[in-house]
Length: 248
Length: 312
Image 1 (cartoon, one colour):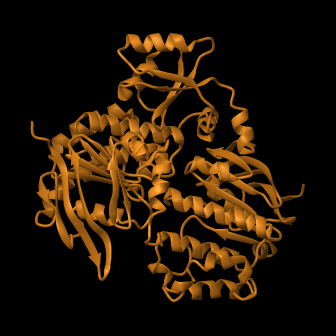
Image 2 (image 1 turned 60 degrees about the vertical axis):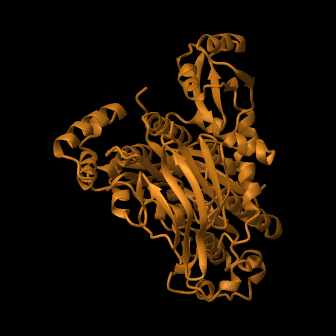
Image 3 (image 1 turned 135 degrees about the horizontal axis):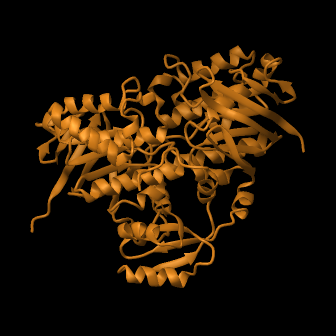
Protein backbone atom coordinates (compact mmCIF):
# COMPACT_ATOMS: atom_id res chain seq x y z
CA UNK A 1 0.00 0.00 0.00
CA UNK A 2 1.28 3.43 -0.90
CA UNK A 3 1.77 5.73 2.07
CA UNK A 4 -0.40 8.82 2.03
CA UNK A 5 1.43 11.98 2.92
CA UNK A 6 -0.36 15.24 3.62
CA UNK A 7 2.84 17.26 3.78
CA UNK A 8 5.94 16.59 1.73
CA UNK A 9 8.71 19.15 2.09
CA UNK A 10 12.03 18.89 0.32
CA UNK A 11 14.87 21.30 0.88
CA UNK A 12 12.34 23.97 1.84
CA UNK A 13 14.23 27.22 2.42
CA UNK A 14 13.44 30.83 3.13
CA UNK A 15 15.99 33.61 3.02
CA UNK A 16 15.53 37.19 4.07
CA UNK A 17 18.49 39.00 2.54
CA UNK A 18 21.54 37.10 3.72
CA UNK A 19 19.69 35.55 6.65
CA UNK A 20 18.42 32.00 6.15
CA UNK A 21 15.41 31.69 8.42
CA UNK A 22 14.47 28.18 7.30
CA UNK A 23 17.35 26.16 5.95
CA UNK A 24 16.62 23.21 3.61
CA UNK A 25 14.14 21.33 5.71
CA UNK A 26 12.98 17.96 4.40
CA UNK A 27 10.22 15.94 6.03
CA UNK A 28 6.91 14.17 5.43
CA UNK A 29 3.76 14.05 7.50
CA UNK A 30 1.41 11.06 7.25
CA UNK A 31 -2.31 11.35 6.85
CA UNK A 32 -4.04 11.39 10.24
CA UNK A 33 -0.82 11.91 12.13
CA UNK A 34 -0.36 14.30 15.06
CA UNK A 35 2.89 16.01 14.18
CA UNK A 36 4.61 18.20 16.77
CA UNK A 37 6.73 20.99 15.31
CA UNK A 38 9.07 22.19 18.04
CA UNK A 39 11.90 24.64 18.28
CA UNK A 40 13.20 27.53 20.34
CA UNK A 41 11.99 31.07 19.64
CA UNK A 42 13.73 32.21 16.50
CA UNK A 43 14.56 28.71 15.24
CA UNK A 44 12.52 29.26 12.07
CA UNK A 45 9.23 27.52 12.93
CA UNK A 46 6.93 30.39 12.08
CA UNK A 47 8.63 31.02 8.76
CA UNK A 48 8.36 27.32 7.87
CA UNK A 49 4.73 27.23 8.90
CA UNK A 50 3.91 30.32 6.83
CA UNK A 51 5.41 28.65 3.77
CA UNK A 52 3.42 25.46 4.38
CA UNK A 53 0.21 27.50 4.70
CA UNK A 54 0.82 29.24 1.38
CA UNK A 55 1.40 32.62 3.03
CA UNK A 56 5.07 32.99 2.20
CA UNK A 57 6.90 31.88 -0.96
CA UNK A 58 9.87 29.59 -0.48
CA UNK A 59 13.24 30.90 -1.66
CA UNK A 60 14.35 27.37 -2.53
CA UNK A 61 13.09 23.83 -2.36
CA UNK A 62 9.56 22.60 -2.69
CA UNK A 63 6.63 21.42 -0.61
CA UNK A 64 3.18 20.03 -1.22
CA UNK A 65 0.43 20.35 1.35
CA UNK A 66 -2.83 18.42 0.96
CA UNK A 67 -1.63 17.58 -2.55
CA UNK A 68 -1.01 21.17 -3.68
CA UNK A 69 2.26 22.88 -4.37
CA UNK A 70 2.87 25.71 -1.90
CA UNK A 71 4.74 27.73 -4.51
CA UNK A 72 2.43 27.44 -7.52
CA UNK A 73 -0.92 26.61 -5.90
CA UNK A 74 -0.89 28.70 -2.75
CA UNK A 75 -4.59 29.55 -3.04
CA UNK A 76 -5.56 25.87 -3.28
CA UNK A 77 -3.38 25.13 -0.25
CA UNK A 78 -5.24 27.76 1.77
CA UNK A 79 -8.61 26.26 0.86
CA UNK A 80 -7.64 22.79 2.01
CA UNK A 81 -6.06 23.58 5.34
CA UNK A 82 -7.33 24.82 8.68
CA UNK A 83 -5.39 27.23 10.85
CA UNK A 84 -5.65 28.30 14.44
CA UNK A 85 -3.31 30.45 16.49
CA UNK A 86 -3.49 31.42 20.10
CA UNK A 87 -3.32 35.08 19.20
CA UNK A 88 -6.20 35.34 16.80
CA UNK A 89 -8.94 32.93 15.88
CA UNK A 90 -12.39 34.34 16.50
CA UNK A 91 -14.19 37.65 16.15
CA UNK A 92 -15.05 38.86 19.65
CA UNK A 93 -17.91 41.06 18.47
CA UNK A 94 -19.72 38.32 16.58
CA UNK A 95 -21.84 35.60 18.14
CA UNK A 96 -20.78 31.97 18.13
CA UNK A 97 -23.11 31.19 15.21
CA UNK A 98 -22.02 34.28 13.29
CA UNK A 99 -18.37 33.29 13.57
CA UNK A 100 -19.18 29.86 12.18
CA UNK A 101 -21.23 31.38 9.34
CA UNK A 102 -18.46 33.82 8.48
CA UNK A 103 -15.73 31.19 8.32
CA UNK A 104 -17.98 28.67 6.54
CA UNK A 105 -18.80 31.37 4.00
CA UNK A 106 -15.15 32.26 3.46
CA UNK A 107 -14.43 28.62 2.69
CA UNK A 108 -17.33 28.57 0.21
CA UNK A 109 -19.64 26.28 2.17
CA UNK A 110 -23.35 26.42 1.29
CA UNK A 111 -25.65 28.16 3.78
CA UNK A 112 -27.66 25.00 4.36
CA UNK A 113 -24.56 22.95 5.14
CA UNK A 114 -23.29 25.68 7.46
CA UNK A 115 -26.55 25.66 9.41
CA UNK A 116 -26.61 21.88 9.71
CA UNK A 117 -23.00 21.67 10.79
CA UNK A 118 -23.39 24.56 13.23
CA UNK A 119 -26.17 22.79 15.10
CA UNK A 120 -24.37 19.48 15.11
CA UNK A 121 -21.09 20.98 16.25
CA UNK A 122 -22.62 23.00 19.06
CA UNK A 123 -24.52 19.95 20.29
CA UNK A 124 -21.30 17.91 20.28
CA UNK A 125 -19.46 20.56 22.26
CA UNK A 126 -22.37 21.13 24.64
CA UNK A 127 -22.44 24.79 23.49
CA UNK A 128 -25.99 24.88 22.08
CA UNK A 129 -27.17 27.34 24.73
CA UNK A 130 -24.35 29.69 23.69
CA UNK A 131 -25.21 29.76 20.00
CA UNK A 132 -26.22 33.43 20.05
CA UNK A 133 -23.77 34.55 22.73
CA UNK A 134 -21.08 37.06 21.82
CA UNK A 135 -17.71 35.37 21.66
CA UNK A 136 -16.19 38.01 23.95
CA UNK A 137 -18.49 36.85 26.75
CA UNK A 138 -17.07 33.31 26.70
CA UNK A 139 -14.33 32.04 29.02
CA UNK A 140 -10.95 31.53 27.35
CA UNK A 141 -11.22 27.75 27.50
CA UNK A 142 -14.46 27.79 25.54
CA UNK A 143 -13.00 30.15 22.98
CA UNK A 144 -10.04 27.84 22.41
CA UNK A 145 -12.29 24.86 21.80
CA UNK A 146 -14.57 26.85 19.55
CA UNK A 147 -11.59 28.20 17.64
CA UNK A 148 -10.33 24.68 17.06
CA UNK A 149 -13.74 23.51 15.87
CA UNK A 150 -13.86 26.50 13.56
CA UNK A 151 -10.45 25.66 12.12
CA UNK A 152 -11.74 22.22 11.07
CA UNK A 153 -15.31 23.35 10.25
CA UNK A 154 -14.73 23.02 6.48
CA UNK A 155 -13.25 19.51 6.89
CA UNK A 156 -9.70 20.35 5.87
CA UNK A 157 -7.22 17.56 5.30
CA UNK A 158 -4.85 19.14 7.75
CA UNK A 159 -5.04 21.69 10.52
CA UNK A 160 -2.14 23.90 11.63
CA UNK A 161 -2.22 24.82 15.31
CA UNK A 162 0.19 27.53 16.42
CA UNK A 163 0.60 27.34 20.20
CA UNK A 164 -3.07 26.58 20.69
CA UNK A 165 -2.96 26.02 24.45
CA UNK A 166 -0.91 28.98 25.73
CA UNK A 167 -2.31 30.39 28.94
CA UNK A 168 -5.25 28.05 29.46
CA UNK A 169 -5.79 26.19 32.72
CA UNK A 170 -4.34 22.69 33.09
CA UNK A 171 -7.63 20.85 32.81
CA UNK A 172 -8.82 22.78 29.75
CA UNK A 173 -5.40 22.25 28.16
CA UNK A 174 -5.85 18.50 28.46
CA UNK A 175 -9.41 18.62 27.21
CA UNK A 176 -8.13 20.55 24.22
CA UNK A 177 -5.78 17.69 23.44
CA UNK A 178 -8.67 15.26 23.66
CA UNK A 179 -10.31 17.29 20.85
CA UNK A 180 -7.09 16.98 18.88
CA UNK A 181 -7.20 13.19 19.34
CA UNK A 182 -10.81 13.10 18.13
CA UNK A 183 -9.91 15.09 15.02
CA UNK A 184 -6.96 12.81 14.40
CA UNK A 185 -9.16 9.72 14.81
CA UNK A 186 -11.44 11.20 12.12
CA UNK A 187 -8.46 11.29 9.77
CA UNK A 188 -7.56 14.96 10.03
CA UNK A 189 -3.83 15.51 10.14
CA UNK A 190 -2.71 17.78 12.97
CA UNK A 191 0.41 19.94 12.73
CA UNK A 192 1.00 21.61 16.07
CA UNK A 193 3.55 23.87 17.76
CA UNK A 194 3.77 24.14 21.53
CA UNK A 195 6.04 25.31 24.32
CA UNK A 196 4.61 22.73 26.73
CA UNK A 197 6.95 19.76 26.64
CA UNK A 198 4.39 17.35 28.11
CA UNK A 199 2.32 18.06 24.99
CA UNK A 200 5.22 16.97 22.83
CA UNK A 201 4.70 13.52 24.36
CA UNK A 202 1.14 13.43 22.99
CA UNK A 203 2.31 13.70 19.38
CA UNK A 204 2.84 10.68 17.14
CA UNK A 205 6.05 12.22 15.86
CA UNK A 206 7.97 15.34 16.73
CA UNK A 207 10.49 17.43 14.84
CA UNK A 208 12.82 19.83 16.59
CA UNK A 209 14.25 22.80 14.72
CA UNK A 210 17.53 24.45 15.64
CA UNK A 211 18.98 27.39 13.70
CA UNK A 212 16.61 26.92 10.77
CA UNK A 213 17.29 23.18 10.34
CA UNK A 214 15.39 20.11 11.52
CA UNK A 215 17.85 18.52 13.93
CA UNK A 216 15.70 15.61 15.12
CA UNK A 217 12.57 13.89 13.89
CA UNK A 218 11.02 10.77 15.37
CA UNK A 219 8.42 9.51 17.83
CA UNK A 220 8.83 10.91 21.36
CA UNK A 221 9.79 7.45 22.56
CA UNK A 222 12.56 7.02 20.00
CA UNK A 223 13.85 10.55 20.54
CA UNK A 224 14.18 9.94 24.26
CA UNK A 225 16.01 6.70 23.52
CA UNK A 226 18.24 8.39 20.93
CA UNK A 227 19.29 11.12 23.37
CA UNK A 228 19.37 8.82 26.39
CA UNK A 229 17.02 10.98 28.48
CA UNK A 230 13.69 10.49 30.27
CA UNK A 231 11.60 13.37 28.97
CA UNK A 232 10.99 15.45 25.89
CA UNK A 233 12.02 18.47 27.95
CA UNK A 234 15.53 17.03 28.19
CA UNK A 235 15.57 16.19 24.48
CA UNK A 236 14.60 19.77 23.72
CA UNK A 237 17.15 21.18 26.14
CA UNK A 238 19.95 19.05 24.70
CA UNK A 239 19.21 20.19 21.15
CA UNK A 240 18.45 23.83 21.91
CA UNK A 241 21.79 24.16 23.65
CA UNK A 242 23.55 23.35 20.38
CA UNK A 243 22.08 26.49 18.80
CA UNK A 244 24.64 28.90 17.38
CA UNK A 245 22.12 31.47 16.30
CA UNK A 246 21.01 33.62 19.19
CA UNK A 247 17.37 33.05 20.07
CA UNK A 248 17.36 36.79 19.86
CA UNK B 1 10.44 38.62 58.46
CA UNK B 2 9.39 41.90 56.91
CA UNK B 3 6.43 42.05 54.59
CA UNK B 4 7.18 44.41 51.75
CA UNK B 5 3.74 43.96 50.21
CA UNK B 6 0.52 43.59 52.15
CA UNK B 7 -2.83 43.22 50.44
CA UNK B 8 -6.06 42.95 52.35
CA UNK B 9 -9.30 41.78 50.84
CA UNK B 10 -8.82 43.32 47.39
CA UNK B 11 -11.97 43.33 45.27
CA UNK B 12 -12.06 44.46 41.65
CA UNK B 13 -15.02 44.29 39.30
CA UNK B 14 -15.52 45.48 35.75
CA UNK B 15 -18.48 46.29 33.58
CA UNK B 16 -20.81 47.57 36.35
CA UNK B 17 -19.93 44.72 38.74
CA UNK B 18 -20.89 42.10 36.19
CA UNK B 19 -17.34 40.77 35.89
CA UNK B 20 -15.61 39.91 39.15
CA UNK B 21 -11.89 39.98 38.45
CA UNK B 22 -10.75 39.75 42.08
CA UNK B 23 -13.06 38.43 44.77
CA UNK B 24 -11.34 39.54 47.97
CA UNK B 25 -7.69 38.65 47.80
CA UNK B 26 -5.35 38.92 50.80
CA UNK B 27 -1.65 38.09 50.93
CA UNK B 28 1.78 39.27 52.02
CA UNK B 29 5.08 39.17 50.23
CA UNK B 30 8.29 39.01 52.28
CA UNK B 31 11.20 41.24 51.46
CA UNK B 32 13.71 39.58 49.14
CA UNK B 33 11.57 36.68 48.03
CA UNK B 34 10.40 35.57 44.62
CA UNK B 35 6.66 35.30 44.84
CA UNK B 36 4.76 33.57 42.04
CA UNK B 37 1.17 34.14 40.99
CA UNK B 38 0.36 30.95 39.15
CA UNK B 39 -2.87 30.64 37.24
CA UNK B 40 -4.51 30.58 33.82
CA UNK B 41 -5.46 33.57 31.70
CA UNK B 42 -8.44 35.38 33.13
CA UNK B 43 -7.63 34.39 36.72
CA UNK B 44 -7.16 38.01 37.83
CA UNK B 45 -3.36 38.19 37.81
CA UNK B 46 -3.11 41.32 35.69
CA UNK B 47 -5.74 43.22 37.69
CA UNK B 48 -3.83 42.46 40.85
CA UNK B 49 -0.54 43.68 39.38
CA UNK B 50 -2.11 46.87 38.11
CA UNK B 51 -3.59 47.61 41.52
CA UNK B 52 -0.25 47.01 43.27
CA UNK B 53 1.58 49.05 40.63
CA UNK B 54 -0.86 51.94 41.31
CA UNK B 55 -2.27 51.88 37.79
CA UNK B 56 -5.75 50.72 38.74
CA UNK B 57 -8.02 51.38 41.69
CA UNK B 58 -9.54 48.47 43.57
CA UNK B 59 -13.29 48.61 44.33
CA UNK B 60 -12.47 47.85 47.96
CA UNK B 61 -9.67 46.55 50.11
CA UNK B 62 -6.28 48.00 50.96
CA UNK B 63 -2.72 47.37 49.88
CA UNK B 64 0.69 48.69 50.78
CA UNK B 65 3.97 48.36 48.93
CA UNK B 66 7.16 49.08 50.85
CA UNK B 67 4.99 50.53 53.62
CA UNK B 68 3.21 52.94 51.27
CA UNK B 69 -0.48 52.97 50.47
CA UNK B 70 -1.22 52.15 46.83
CA UNK B 71 -3.85 54.89 46.58
CA UNK B 72 -2.55 57.71 48.76
CA UNK B 73 1.17 57.30 48.11
CA UNK B 74 1.02 56.22 44.50
CA UNK B 75 3.72 58.65 43.35
CA UNK B 76 6.25 57.39 45.88
CA UNK B 77 5.43 53.78 45.08
CA UNK B 78 6.15 54.34 41.40
CA UNK B 79 9.70 55.34 42.29
CA UNK B 80 10.23 52.16 44.26
CA UNK B 81 8.66 49.61 41.96
CA UNK B 82 9.38 48.36 38.48
CA UNK B 83 6.53 47.01 36.41
CA UNK B 84 6.79 44.87 33.31
CA UNK B 85 3.35 44.49 31.77
CA UNK B 86 2.31 41.35 29.92
CA UNK B 87 2.04 43.19 26.65
CA UNK B 88 5.22 44.76 25.25
CA UNK B 89 4.82 48.41 26.17
CA UNK B 90 8.02 50.14 25.17
CA UNK B 91 8.34 52.64 22.34
CA UNK B 92 8.65 50.69 19.09
CA UNK B 93 10.06 53.69 17.22
CA UNK B 94 12.86 54.27 19.71
CA UNK B 95 16.04 52.22 19.73
CA UNK B 96 17.06 49.96 22.58
CA UNK B 97 19.33 52.63 24.02
CA UNK B 98 16.77 55.42 23.53
CA UNK B 99 14.09 53.44 25.36
CA UNK B 100 16.40 52.80 28.27
CA UNK B 101 17.54 56.43 28.39
CA UNK B 102 13.93 57.58 28.25
CA UNK B 103 12.90 55.53 31.26
CA UNK B 104 16.01 56.54 33.18
CA UNK B 105 15.25 60.21 32.52
CA UNK B 106 11.59 59.90 33.49
CA UNK B 107 12.74 58.59 36.86
CA UNK B 108 15.41 61.26 37.20
CA UNK B 109 18.37 58.96 36.91
CA UNK B 110 20.89 57.81 34.30
CA UNK B 111 21.86 54.50 32.75
CA UNK B 112 25.36 54.88 34.23
CA UNK B 113 24.08 55.38 37.76
CA UNK B 114 22.28 52.05 37.95
CA UNK B 115 24.24 50.13 35.36
CA UNK B 116 25.33 47.54 37.91
CA UNK B 117 21.78 46.37 38.35
CA UNK B 118 21.00 45.84 34.68
CA UNK B 119 24.49 44.94 33.44
CA UNK B 120 23.92 41.19 33.48
CA UNK B 121 20.79 41.51 31.33
CA UNK B 122 21.53 44.59 29.26
CA UNK B 123 24.91 43.33 28.06
CA UNK B 124 23.12 40.61 26.12
CA UNK B 125 21.32 43.20 23.98
CA UNK B 126 23.83 46.05 24.09
CA UNK B 127 25.47 45.03 20.78
CA UNK B 128 22.14 45.91 19.14
CA UNK B 129 21.55 49.14 21.06
CA UNK B 130 20.90 51.15 17.90
CA UNK B 131 18.15 48.84 16.71
CA UNK B 132 14.56 50.01 17.05
CA UNK B 133 12.52 48.19 19.68
CA UNK B 134 9.84 47.34 17.12
CA UNK B 135 12.41 45.32 15.14
CA UNK B 136 13.50 43.12 18.02
CA UNK B 137 12.75 39.44 18.52
CA UNK B 138 10.64 38.29 21.45
CA UNK B 139 13.63 37.35 23.59
CA UNK B 140 15.34 40.69 23.06
CA UNK B 141 12.17 42.65 23.78
CA UNK B 142 11.82 40.74 27.02
CA UNK B 143 15.36 41.65 28.10
CA UNK B 144 14.90 45.29 27.12
CA UNK B 145 11.60 45.51 29.01
CA UNK B 146 13.23 44.02 32.08
CA UNK B 147 16.14 46.46 31.82
CA UNK B 148 13.71 49.39 31.55
CA UNK B 149 11.75 48.14 34.57
CA UNK B 150 15.01 48.04 36.57
CA UNK B 151 16.70 51.25 35.48
CA UNK B 152 15.50 53.34 38.45
CA UNK B 153 16.73 50.69 40.91
CA UNK B 154 13.35 49.69 42.35
CA UNK B 155 12.97 47.62 45.50
CA UNK B 156 10.12 45.59 44.12
CA UNK B 157 9.68 44.17 40.64
CA UNK B 158 6.26 43.27 39.22
CA UNK B 159 6.47 40.96 36.22
CA UNK B 160 3.19 40.12 34.52
CA UNK B 161 3.60 36.89 32.53
CA UNK B 162 7.17 37.62 31.45
CA UNK B 163 7.58 34.17 29.89
CA UNK B 164 4.32 33.61 28.03
CA UNK B 165 4.97 32.33 24.52
CA UNK B 166 8.64 31.78 25.31
CA UNK B 167 10.34 28.43 24.65
CA UNK B 168 11.37 26.22 27.59
CA UNK B 169 15.08 26.97 27.34
CA UNK B 170 14.63 30.75 27.24
CA UNK B 171 12.13 30.49 30.11
CA UNK B 172 14.71 28.71 32.21
CA UNK B 173 17.31 31.37 31.43
CA UNK B 174 14.87 34.13 32.32
CA UNK B 175 14.23 32.63 35.74
CA UNK B 176 17.97 32.31 36.28
CA UNK B 177 18.27 36.07 35.65
CA UNK B 178 15.57 36.68 38.27
CA UNK B 179 17.38 34.47 40.77
CA UNK B 180 20.53 36.52 40.30
CA UNK B 181 18.64 39.80 40.79
CA UNK B 182 17.27 38.45 44.02
CA UNK B 183 20.56 37.08 45.29
CA UNK B 184 22.90 39.87 44.19
CA UNK B 185 20.66 42.87 44.70
CA UNK B 186 18.10 41.76 47.28
CA UNK B 187 15.20 42.57 44.99
CA UNK B 188 11.70 41.41 45.84
CA UNK B 189 10.06 39.95 42.75
CA UNK B 190 6.40 39.18 42.15
CA UNK B 191 5.94 37.32 38.87
CA UNK B 192 2.94 35.69 37.30
CA UNK B 193 2.88 32.76 34.91
CA UNK B 194 0.46 30.30 33.38
CA UNK B 195 3.28 27.69 33.22
CA UNK B 196 2.92 25.49 36.28
CA UNK B 197 6.47 24.17 36.01
CA UNK B 198 7.81 27.66 36.75
CA UNK B 199 6.25 27.48 40.22
CA UNK B 200 9.29 25.55 41.38
CA UNK B 201 11.48 28.61 40.69
CA UNK B 202 9.62 30.65 43.30
CA UNK B 203 10.16 30.84 47.05
CA UNK B 204 6.42 30.96 47.60
CA UNK B 205 3.48 30.80 45.26
CA UNK B 206 -0.18 31.63 45.20
CA UNK B 207 -2.31 29.45 42.96
CA UNK B 208 -4.99 31.70 41.55
CA UNK B 209 -8.18 30.99 39.61
CA UNK B 210 -11.36 32.95 38.96
CA UNK B 211 -10.27 35.91 41.06
CA UNK B 212 -9.49 33.86 44.16
CA UNK B 213 -6.38 32.38 45.71
CA UNK B 214 -6.70 28.62 45.96
CA UNK B 215 -3.70 28.32 48.25
CA UNK B 216 -0.49 30.07 49.28
CA UNK B 217 2.60 28.14 50.29
CA UNK B 218 6.07 27.13 49.23
CA UNK B 219 5.97 24.89 46.15
CA UNK B 220 7.22 22.03 48.32
CA UNK B 221 4.55 22.74 50.91
CA UNK B 222 1.79 22.64 48.33
CA UNK B 223 3.01 19.31 47.03
CA UNK B 224 3.30 17.93 50.58
CA UNK B 225 -0.33 18.84 51.22
CA UNK B 226 -1.60 16.87 48.25
CA UNK B 227 -3.56 14.15 49.99
CA UNK B 228 -5.09 12.00 47.25
CA UNK B 229 -3.67 8.69 46.13
CA UNK B 230 -2.13 9.39 42.73
CA UNK B 231 -1.10 6.70 40.26
CA UNK B 232 0.74 6.89 36.99
CA UNK B 233 -0.75 4.50 34.44
CA UNK B 234 0.57 3.38 31.07
CA UNK B 235 -0.40 0.64 28.60
CA UNK B 236 0.11 -0.33 24.97
CA UNK B 237 -3.16 1.33 23.88
CA UNK B 238 -2.92 4.86 25.18
CA UNK B 239 -5.87 6.44 23.34
CA UNK B 240 -8.25 3.73 24.51
CA UNK B 241 -6.73 3.69 27.99
CA UNK B 242 -8.02 7.16 28.87
CA UNK B 243 -11.63 6.19 28.14
CA UNK B 244 -11.23 2.90 29.96
CA UNK B 245 -9.74 4.57 33.03
CA UNK B 246 -12.59 7.07 33.19
CA UNK B 247 -15.16 4.27 32.91
CA UNK B 248 -13.58 2.35 35.77
CA UNK B 249 -15.64 2.58 38.93
CA UNK B 250 -12.60 3.25 41.12
CA UNK B 251 -11.55 6.28 39.03
CA UNK B 252 -11.94 9.76 40.39
CA UNK B 253 -10.07 11.73 37.71
CA UNK B 254 -7.80 10.72 34.83
CA UNK B 255 -5.66 13.17 32.88
CA UNK B 256 -2.74 12.92 30.53
CA UNK B 257 0.68 13.91 31.85
CA UNK B 258 3.31 13.45 29.19
CA UNK B 259 3.75 9.80 28.38
CA UNK B 260 1.41 8.47 31.07
CA UNK B 261 -1.94 9.21 32.68
CA UNK B 262 -2.28 10.51 36.21
CA UNK B 263 -5.15 8.82 37.94
CA UNK B 264 -6.74 9.80 41.24
CA UNK B 265 -8.78 7.00 42.74
CA UNK B 266 -11.61 6.54 45.17
CA UNK B 267 -10.81 5.30 48.68
CA UNK B 268 -10.21 1.61 49.15
CA UNK B 269 -9.41 0.54 45.61
CA UNK B 270 -6.30 -1.47 44.83
CA UNK B 271 -3.79 -1.42 42.01
CA UNK B 272 -4.43 -5.11 41.48
CA UNK B 273 -8.12 -4.41 40.86
CA UNK B 274 -7.25 -1.80 38.22
CA UNK B 275 -4.72 -4.09 36.62
CA UNK B 276 -7.17 -6.95 36.20
CA UNK B 277 -9.84 -4.52 34.93
CA UNK B 278 -7.44 -3.21 32.28
CA UNK B 279 -6.38 -6.69 31.22
CA UNK B 280 -10.07 -7.50 30.83
CA UNK B 281 -10.34 -4.50 28.48
CA UNK B 282 -7.57 -5.89 26.31
CA UNK B 283 -4.62 -3.79 27.48
CA UNK B 284 -1.18 -5.27 27.79
CA UNK B 285 2.14 -3.90 29.08
CA UNK B 286 0.09 -2.29 31.82
CA UNK B 287 2.21 -0.27 34.25
CA UNK B 288 0.66 1.22 37.39
CA UNK B 289 2.73 2.94 40.05
CA UNK B 290 2.07 5.43 42.85
CA UNK B 291 3.68 8.76 42.01
CA UNK B 292 4.37 12.08 43.68
CA UNK B 293 2.14 14.96 42.66
CA UNK B 294 3.45 17.86 40.62
CA UNK B 295 2.30 21.46 41.08
CA UNK B 296 0.01 20.91 38.13
CA UNK B 297 -1.68 17.95 39.87
CA UNK B 298 -2.13 20.14 42.94
CA UNK B 299 -3.61 22.97 40.93
CA UNK B 300 -6.03 20.61 39.23
CA UNK B 301 -7.10 19.14 42.55
CA UNK B 302 -7.61 22.59 44.08
CA UNK B 303 -9.45 24.27 41.23
CA UNK B 304 -13.18 24.18 41.72
CA UNK B 305 -13.84 23.37 38.11
CA UNK B 306 -12.26 23.90 34.74
CA UNK B 307 -13.24 26.96 32.75
CA UNK B 308 -15.55 24.78 30.79
CA UNK B 309 -17.11 21.42 31.29
CA UNK B 310 -16.93 19.14 28.34
CA UNK B 311 -19.68 16.85 27.28
CA UNK B 312 -18.55 13.41 28.36
